[in-house]
Image 1 (cartoon, rainbow, N blue to C red):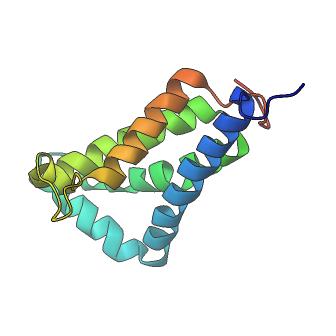
Image 2: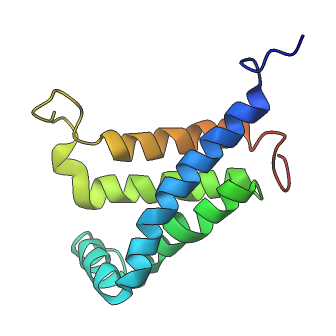
Image 3: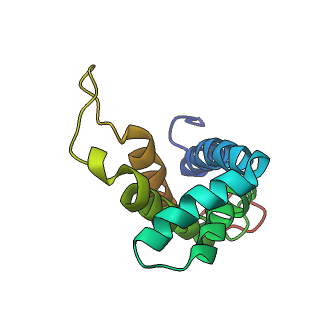
Length: 135
C-alpha cells in the first residue's frame, strides 16, 4: 500500500514551490520599482562600506534563484542565493528586529527566518526527485 504521507520527493516539491513562489513575489515587487529598490538597497550597502552595484544581487536572490528552485534546476545553487540574499536583508534592513517579538508573541523576523532556513534545508537536501534536474 502506498503511503502518500511518507513521500520525501513530494515534500521537497512542496517546499520548493513554497519558498520559490513566495520569494519570487518579493523579486517581482522589486522589478516593478527597480530604480527605487536598487537605490534603497545600494544606500544601505554604501553605508556599510560595500559598493552600490552589489544591490543588483537582490535580483539574483529574489528573481533568478526562486525560478531555479521552483523548476528544480540547480536548486542547491538557487537555495544558496536565497540564503545569502536573506543574510544581507537581515543585516542591512532588519538587524534591529533580530531579538524582538510582535504584539502577538511571534518573532519579528518570522518571514525572513522562514526564507533563510527553508533555503538552508534545500541547500542540504537538494531538489528531490520531482525536478527538471534532480540534485
